[in-house]
Length: 255
Image: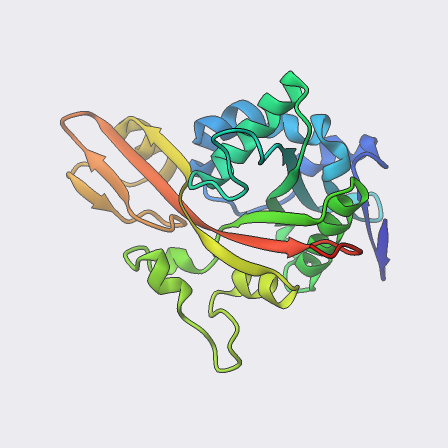
């Protein structure tokens, strides 16, 4: 548990009664992200099945931030700790390993979400520290994270590799969320080129975005890190989101 002013941060294992409240945060995730099929199938089960890896911040009785992580076996044949399919892959591995009783060798963060009214108060740093501590409490030496750069959506046509090369004068990443991770001690390892995939009919994309989706090719969608590819003949549009793998050493570990 960590406390800072009037904010209290604990794992959900310590305060399971708070689990319903983590879904009531006033957040600003793009609507289409929830339609990633892996997320739709498994995300809502993370807090209940892996509460010792999930952290929650409260102000009084109100949940103001959540941080969700999952453990998985990164040493199994055909696997690696930083798969190209990033978020989707580690989430599916985590539940497969849980079902089959495979031991966890690594932990991956899935998200940190801060209530919109609490942005700009440094809460993201404290949540990240709490997630590292939670991983360490379970015996892990590192916390991995397929990071979603939060300013990349402003330049959807810029390749992620080029975007990653951008630095401020102090050498830190130009992207604010990547900068949080690096300032917290994280090391950028590689790009996850297909971290999340959202596929839907053109009518679905119209409902999710309010855009016409009436022409073939790349469609810029607010909140999307890269364009969505539209095919009118197939009545389909697909979004493949790249993320960035970051490794954090957890407290008390040498790895």
